[in-house]
Length: 94
Image (cartoon, rainbow, N blue to C red):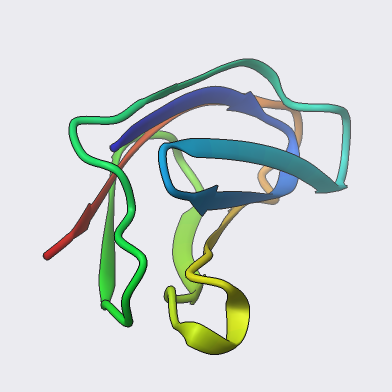
């Protein structure tokens, strides 16, 4: 899955199945968000990996999908360098 958007400060991306949503935690609202899936997130415990392809801040996995969280993945982008920046991340699972 690939996610793109313009981030100001801190956002959380939630992935379930073949849908994703973005929630602004700090800063201005995220803009220009797109999510493209090659496969749906499976409905079984799995580990996910995230790779930043563009953007100046930090990206990390907060939660991997499992039975307790209804097979939901959560990723955080933190851009605390002032102003917003374009991000592109790639999320993989097996």
